[in-house]
Amino acid sequence: MRKEANPTMNEYLSDHVHLTDDGTAVVILDQTQLPCRTEYLTLRTAQEMFDAIRLLQVRGAPAIGICAAYDLYVLAQQVSSDTPEAFLTQLRQQADYLASSRPTAVNLSWALNRMLDIAAAQTSIADMLSALHRECIAIHEEDIAMCRAISEYGLTLIKDGDGILTHCNAGPLATSRYGTALGPLFLGKERGMHFHVFSDETRPLLQGARLTSYELSRAGIDVTLICDNMASLVMKNGWIQACFVGCDRVAANGDTANKIGTSGVAILARHYGIPFYVLGPTSTIDLSCATGADIPIEQRDPEEIKQKFYAEPMALPEVKCYNPAFDVTDQSLISGIVTEYGICRAPYTESLRTVFAQKTAG
Ligand code: MRU
Image (cartoon, rainbow, N blue to C red; front, side, top):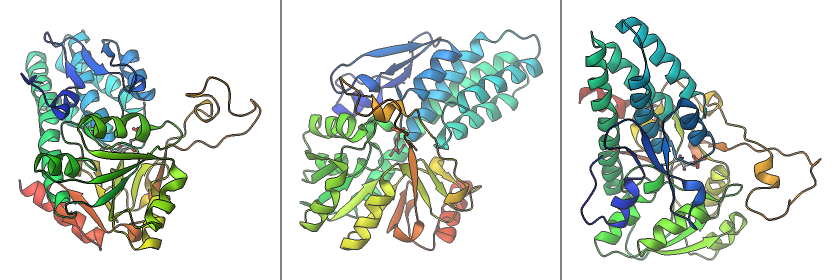
């Protein structure tokens, strides 16, 4: 990706995943070190790439798709095969391995499949490598454009001075440039608007505290960090005019998987009569899942609940833990799904299909 001469906060963050100049490695900003340290990691092997996604050093649905596309291009250069067929077989094995790092965000397999399809359409290994290089850059550049369009549509849903509640992190670090759920806030800020953002800390791994409040605060947007169990009170106080969240996979009927705790926010918003919007690109919509029941939910290491981020254990070692990384918000609780093609409203089975028809028509 090109680097900006005088990057704004968003431009700086949007470069958090990129190829090295010689294209033989992927560089990522290690998100597990934020907000305390800005450290970059250079990924060269399939194992390092798998671990970076699995351990959330790079995370957020669109960002892991972009990263995996770059990863596959780097791995493709390491394949030693005499024939295009053997090359493709090895490439598919690498793609399957990367795709197995996290199951919920569909952007991961979406980006890898795009890379495999473009390679399969070539007749020589040299052409495959050139096509793979173009495709991973295209995936990244398209994400920047999609986030910008989502930000424009999302901005029409709020007005100057509004209070917005968000959960987890769906800003530049989770995507590229503007982000999805946070995109309208960055865009509004550029246009002189002011918002009061309440960021759920987002247990267990605190993406809201570590990443969302960091991104917003560094961009000069008014942000207040709250514990997840405070969302009801700030809504009751009348401080929230809309909830904006990202998504990891949207089913054909609009059911939406996002960070664990999102469905609780939606239920609270319905109780208080506050609109609840999901913002995400069409690369996150999976029409092959009829409903949320078809979305695979990642289960993570119980130690993340008992140990992570604290000097001393927070629970006895023998205590049982349940640690799903995502939950599904029922489509009936969603006021609108904001995509790069516009705002889908219920019934989502129809409106999402219309969006895909638009996309296919180009
Ligand atoms: O586990 P994470 O940090 O990858 O979860 C991320 C989220 O749930 C985001 O809200 C989602 O990926 C949307 S990012 C635009």
